Picture 1 (cartoon, rainbow, N blue to C red):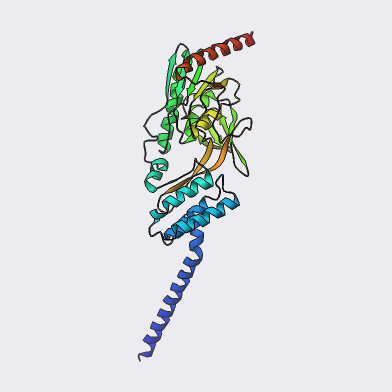
Picture 2: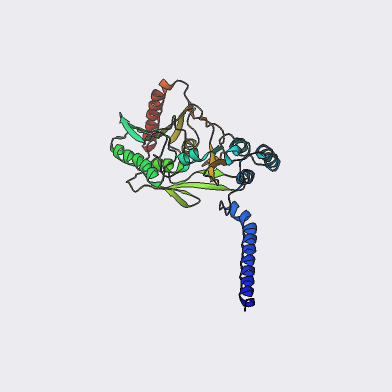
Length: 344
């Protein structure tokens, strides 16, 4: 009478054992694949965490085969005794710079949330673009814009567009775009902010090792490879007046991309000092614990195809900050006269 229950117990045990072995095998097979998609069935060890992070740096601008192999070996050596994930951070920071360049960085979870999270103020200072008009010349000042979500990005763009629209009736002599001190951040709301000053069509590109991605402007909309990245619903009118773009040694990263978008535009010229020299493309890659690699993967190129990745040298180099305004106004006056003579 007791044999049947024992048989059933053995069957149940066999089924559960088989299921356990099956699931364990699935985890063993699928976990490496899932990890590369940033999906973790089981938490990674510090060593595995570091290895996956370095894999994500493979598209880095400086990651040729020999350099990449050397970095893999060095990181493996440095994290061999790591007991927690944060022990790997110094090695990963060095790896990011070696494989991406000086513009690349490893950001711990707190820093990553500040730069790439959606809950921030939208920039380092909370500042928005402003437009000021004096004697027929209107100046659009673009501050740094880091982090924030879609709403913060839109506020940034719309503040500039609204200011340009309000200034348009009294702007008779030309425009000034002031990028001095702008450290960069999110390039798309910045480019949308200056869309009324940019001619339609391709304004620049991001040049990778194997392709070139065109950045285009059409009206108020900025696109990458034809996909919309930012726009504004505010009224915008393209200008035919001359545009002076101001840069200095602290104009960096995405602000440099904005400056490059005006290079070779017939009614625009650059004034100031050479820019910071981070005229490259960074792509964030989030890791298991919320940290991120901000990896440099491409260089900026202007509409004529000239590649940068180095400081932008302005058309008019001005060493004395006090000489900016006179130099710009003299140029605007000359351009206005030239345009008037051409219209006759």
